[in-house]
Image 1 (cartoon, helix red, strand yellow):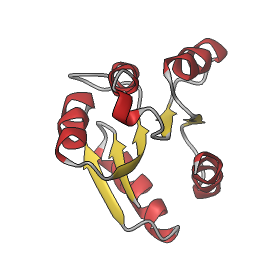
Image 2 (cartoon, helix red, strand yellow):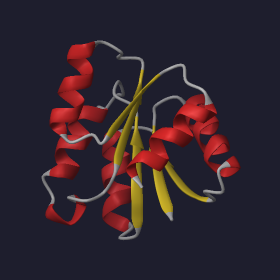
Image 3 (cartoon, one colour):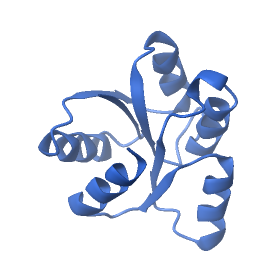
Length: 120
């Protein structure tokens, strides 16, 4: 199973990748922002799960989610948003855009594990 982690913070990408590695997910790609993620998605037909931040330069996570959901081939791809945006309105906005699950930073490895299991 291949995952794509998108976050403008290299530290956060490392934390997520390390957590995923402990959960036996070894095939993890990463991107700094939505534009880079979109390019990676276009170059890799075998990405199974998208984990994205909301607030990023170039193209934010919400824009990325909308772009991904607009493509028929990504209709069933699980998307988890990991963000500091914890308000009810933000969660609803993300879910309406097509996010399958939502994690508010900071989070524990257990939370990521549970949210990932829920979408798989």
